[in-house]
Image 1 (cartoon, rainbow, N blue to C red):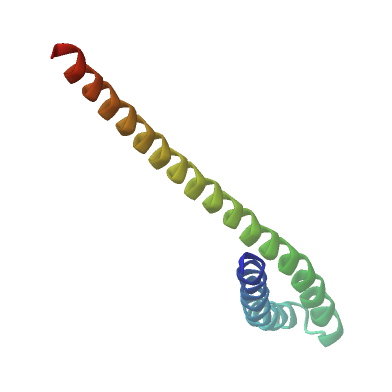
Image 2: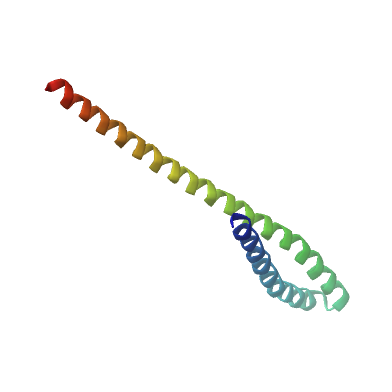
Length: 101
């Protein structure tokens, strides 16, 4: 089950990366063509830009995913620690009652 969620998240990052890059490639191509007046040069610039930024965006998304997983784990660990502390406090109170009697 966990692997399915991980793969689904991976695919979502890929699809988002692709759709965003497609839009960006079009913009880069148009700007490059306006500046150079040459379709071949504009196409080369847009292609190189697309490849580099696709990889960077994908890695960026994955890195942030790891950051959020660490944050969630720390919160979960903190909750467990608090629960453990509460159990110990209850035991101590119970012992105090026994010794006071």
